[in-house]
Length: 144
Image 1 (tube, helix red, strand yellow):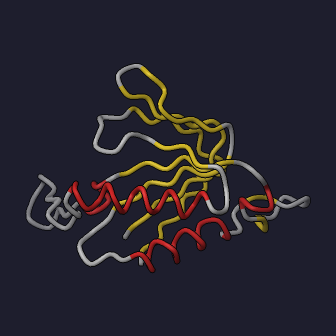
Image 2: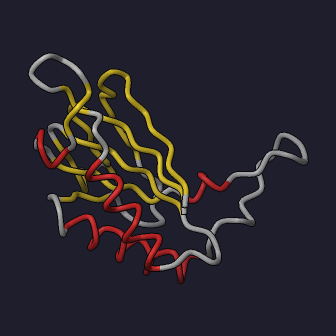
């Protein structure tokens, strides 16, 4: 399981000219799954994400989590996090979990995040336009 986290201001996901998810501030979380991922990994990474101290405190130091700072999470499924370019210029996605299992894991992941904060989502499997105002910029890669 891989996640790419960006601290953001306004962020949204649009599918077919309709906004399907949007936040005013918080975290944008891109998530991808691979064979062998488990519920315990989902639980671990969700808790890790909401406790990351990447928001500024009163002195401007990144010392607050989203739980302390406030905001929402915009969760976006992204199988391309498992792109492999070792054999040339056309990425292989063979390491990404198949859609039938991945959608279930994506829903479980979002449900786990919702235990802590409000979550908006993209649309699994859709061609999405993602607009992000990355604050900092702050981008964190987590893998479990």
